[in-house]
Length: 514
Image 1 (cartoon, rainbow, N blue to C red):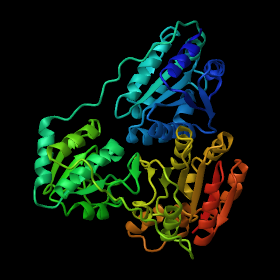
Image 2 (cartoon, rainbow, N blue to C red):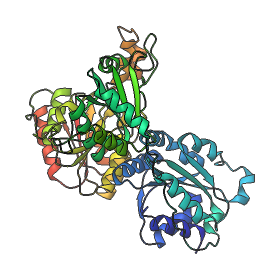
Image 3 (cartoon, rainbow, N blue to C red):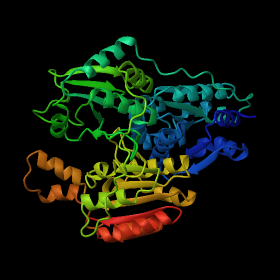
């Protein structure tokens, strides 16, 4: 057994059995090991950002580490943007990066780079393997680091000769420490704040947005009358009939401040104190004012689910809450394609237990409100704000949950970052339905220019915002990647084509012209 085989066997034995890969010469021993050792599914991605984004989506939905195999520093660098998103989402991910042979590094070959410096900003743990004998042990430690709740990124750099040299048996993963439990004082302070007869809000993030956390939050709201609100871009949000109605904090700072300012106290549960995505002159960076009381029930690193359940018990909250139990599905729309009709079309047809990867950005703002009482579903977003995550994240989610439909609500501009994900969806025959929201522009940049006081866009500004001359033909792009596509220009046609795509297995793309 060589080092690469001991590595792959260690991963498989720990239940890490899907590898999103874009390998090169230095990774050939690992490619051979994946081929010869039964139990690892290899998924080829045509761009490293697709591999890292898919690993993120897979990790969020499987709750197992997403695994990537990348080529040296430049290959890893191509995937960093979506590791940034994954770090913010607290997704467990293991990156395997091939490196030049130890004896070749001194030659400073063209692809030689400082991989550690690239990896540290997006990794909780970085290690350069020293020998084939140590490789299985390094892999086991990487798995343990990634699985530490609430999820971390581990990056292992593996020299080519260490992959090839003789090694011993795989190594079992040690015990995984549980996330820290919150103390009694935090429970007591949160209970006191939420019992007060004044406007108060329980602000949720992280694992609080999953099944157990939401059930406990609903109990707390029933006992105290507090408002439930969540961070702008939750990593994974269980939604639909039978889950509590939660207001999402708006994106722009003025609207966010207006949404949170009426409350005398804000209790944070698994979320940081919310801040503006960007700094705007005259606008506070932090949305909670000094005049409001901030109570930290649980940080993003804590066991927020346990904390919410303890708080609900301390408040004497009833165990079973009738929460949003009646399904309310909007009627199927007709007429012009607008954010409202787009949102209604998807919400009205959303299958039970669908996974919605929402990178709609500016085009489907009403969707969350329209779908809050629709069929049960899961929403994924981009907590780190690195655009282009939608297609690869949907790809990874579909591999993690082959029995569930994945709907990717995708802005056209950001989709161009990772359109190669369509090829992987076609090759793997994944049940991903992509709706491209084609307004032929980076519309968010136009909004930001207007916020900056620009009344009329000059030719140069239009050139930097518009996606015309030539217009991007998404149906042709999808066909070239092996995914059937269709263009729609009315809400009636969107309803018809979306319903048709849901009835057919495999990936489909709908280009909705706005």
